[in-house]
Image (cartoon, rainbow, N blue to C red):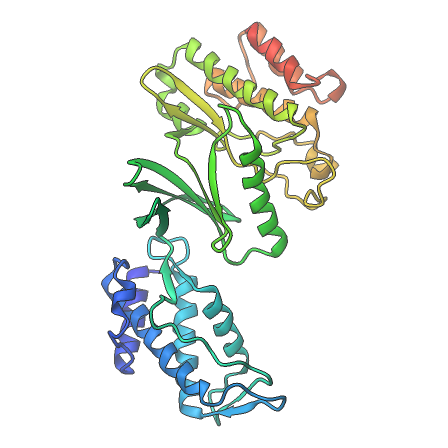
Length: 388
């Protein structure tokens, strides 16, 4: 879909129906796209006007009440445009969020509104709160931050995402630093939200220079702020593989292993080890490694670790496909770490035809199909890695 053309088509539909009204334009001044800004302003006006009319019939008793045909059709049209825009602009730079109260209200109205003959308002429906000074819509590419006594709004830039969340970066002008925001997607189930929040809680409890630092969790938006890193491991090696010294590779590998020594000392298993979840920050005098993405972390006796957790990633032990991801243990973690160490030292993922005998022995032990012959814990990986 051509996003610009889609926004234009929705804008023209509102213009044709005379529904673009500038009354609430000041609430949407931060929306950069002019016509999207006018659309959201017009939709806000429509909702306030139509729900004000609906309030004349509210609250309802146990029998409900009749809502007139014309405003029913107008409200259906506004809801269709809103939901269409919301879904079509997801994961684009024009993505926006809908206030939770209005989002639930819109979904409720969609269930009972009728395009002909008027609509039956549900029984025991309360009067609707009308937003005169608060926006119904908010750009997904902004974050509001309260620093000391002042509030600031910063533009977000989408830098990544997955099935659970989108990841943005922004420049905080108060601290003059770049931060990262990880925001859960709206459609997550309650259990998925709990897993997302648990990821923050786990990272927040860690205290290690090799674990990505997180700062605060926003319950209302289900999002949290964390430190900004310069590269993922795969980005850094892809860009610098030909020029990296062996000593640099060993330093990166040793930091990764220190991180996992610490993680395992806390009784945790990461379970999603990959070059995308290992981050690097370049300082003037040193390259620092930090581990991120603890969404699949395994905690003893946790009800959020299930049989149906998806096996994913080239670096994971393929035996998990048959054994089930719920069987994941330290031997699977040392398997993945062996692959990561090989990747760090060589820039390669294919472990065939290794000419260095010490490295070949290290890889064969770490990836041995017989789990009893593998590295039994991270400490064993560390000892063998030092000898390479």
